[in-house]
Length: 143
View 1 (cartoon, rainbow, N blue to C red):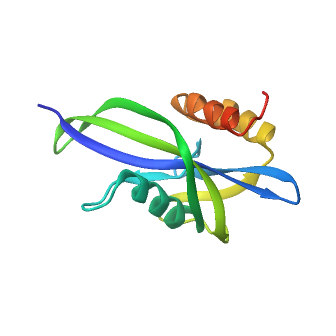
View 2: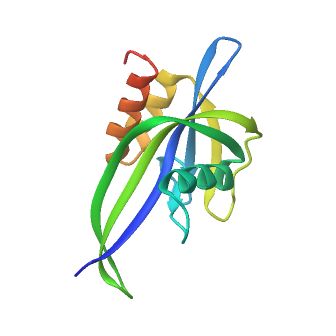
């Protein structure tokens, strides 16, 4: 039986002076992505998402709603086949300052929603297209 691994993260947004901004990270592989990470013992999936967002980006957020789950398999040299689930939430930034966790990511920044979508399309992971699209829909952004 395959090992199961759960991660969580979010599409983080803020509203500043009436403008909507979406947070994107540039991961250590040079790809556009969303803050996420592995669940730790004793955590709920929601706690994992908020902790990982804060650790990776410096932003303290509040979950507004679930977005979707990405599920896939990968091979780990120690455990063999791993069933991976990544739970994504729509998260509103409430406090904190952008500060990338340099051990995990290269950069974090805020973007206009259309710029965020364009960057995802050009340099992001394919499975995040659905996540960002659904999150932007929840935020009433027309693409």
